[in-house]
Image: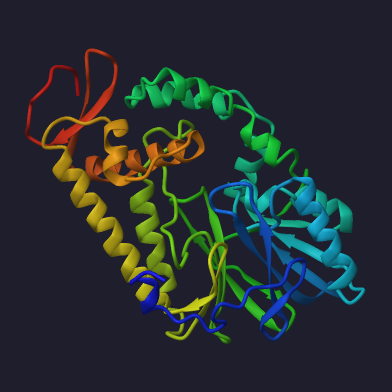
Length: 359
């Protein structure tokens, strides 16, 4: 456990759900884990006992990626853990593959509706269909404009153009819309939707103020910081600012709120974790600003922020995150963006004029 984690309270200690089993974390609220084929090797999913439209059953929050191993794990859950009751609805916190990948399969398997925010649903449909401009190949000019010239890395990234549809082969053709401030009754609890931005288009966390519970999705994680990236589809976004502003929405929750994150273990200490994340990004922004005493591209900022070797999957997110921090400083007027004679964007501290190019 690192020093920051030690400031948090983990009420279940080292306990984890057994393979293809549930661990009850609050009455009627169950934790399960599914494997992922990434460095981040698991996702936490949540099963809530429910009564929906007059039927007893379960609401699923998040789905796992679309692969045979995850489908098999779900089938074991269905056969052994649901007490013979059906899945009544599927909620996806956001559009990333580990959260929505099997949504269409689950909804079809149980004839259950999908509940999502409009922003997340729209992006999931768009990316699953691999529409031009949002498939993986669209990232290459974006990366090149921000300084990536390594031909091997570019070729590897080109091979990832079908990455999203492989993990999310389909999305339900219809959905039930979630939106900020909406109250959703699940079982005996009322959950308030808290929309978050920066990590994804319109992330939906679920907060039960009465019972001090927060299903935080990827917005608040106990061990790692949430990825916040600028992507080719929205090349001049300001996601770090959106993310930091979104974190403030969780502070009105009770101090002893049990946070149920998508990665890592359930914990208490929400306000402490938000303060840690604020401090983390403040440190990163200070490092990036200092580095831009001389002009730097986003690619040149990556090794400053990420000290370990990165594979292509990790590098694509690292570059997006480096650019996101540059953008906050640029939008705040602390950096200027200059287009070099080579067509690459570089950022330098405002008021300097160290390279040729156009602003």
